[in-house]
Length: 145
Image 1 (cartoon, rainbow, N blue to C red):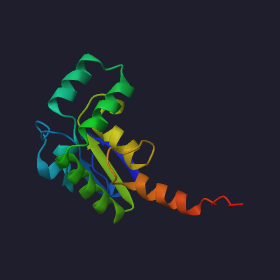
Image 2: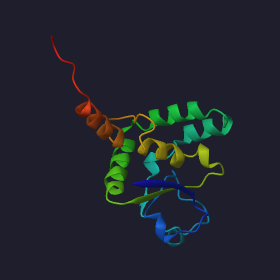
Image 3: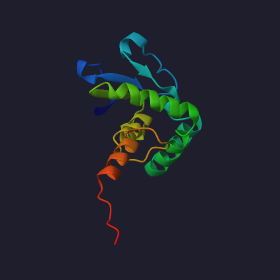
């Protein structure tokens, strides 16, 4: 599965696959039909507190990721992530949409790294768990003497 991150201002294309909006609120001045969103995950977006913290500390990307992963451990966020993983597994291409000015400081870009398995997920869901199970099974076990 390929995962891309796009701004909501970029025009939709056929190669986008599953289009997922990762924003707490629907973007202003954007009609739902024009955005062509397949799935909207407000629970997986930054909390208002985290968005305010990010506005004050835009240079602290690692701390932002850590706080975002902690926010994703709520039951609502876990359910949203599980829904996203289920739908993403059926598609070849997933495009995460954001409304931020800086693509690296958005929930969509952090969620992309999480889905690609670059970061440990906050719960036992997602591709990192499946990859870890496969690695443990493939690793040779030491012989007992």
